[in-house]
Image 1 (cartoon, rainbow, N blue to C red):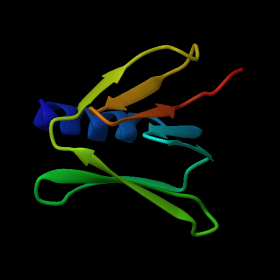
Image 2: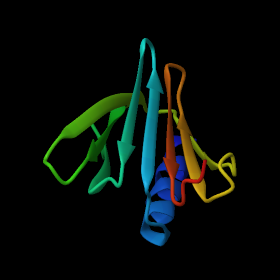
Image 3: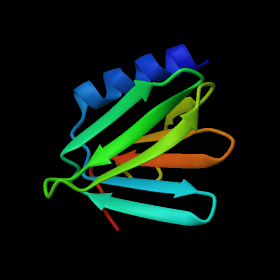
Image 4: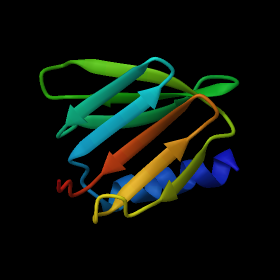
Amino acid sequence: MSEKSREFFAEWLFDHKPEVVVINSIGMVEFFRIPFRISLKYIGNSYLFAVQIEKGERFELEIESDFNALCSDKYDAHTLLIVDSKSSIEIVEDYKV
């Protein structure tokens, strides 16, 4: 499933301009507003997901190679959800509380 998910992720990022990235993993939650760069890089048996903001701050999270990427409208907006067995990443185009 990861190849289709990787392609879906790339197409979604090409068509959308994310405002918020929320990363939930074991023992932590990270929140990024207006990300400057989002990347996904294959590193052998897994992928390295990275978010960078304008100040140069960068956050990286390793996700399993069999991750799933799908859309959900949790925030009444265009949202991409990336899930593996240890973490979830929500990328929101138009965040509204």
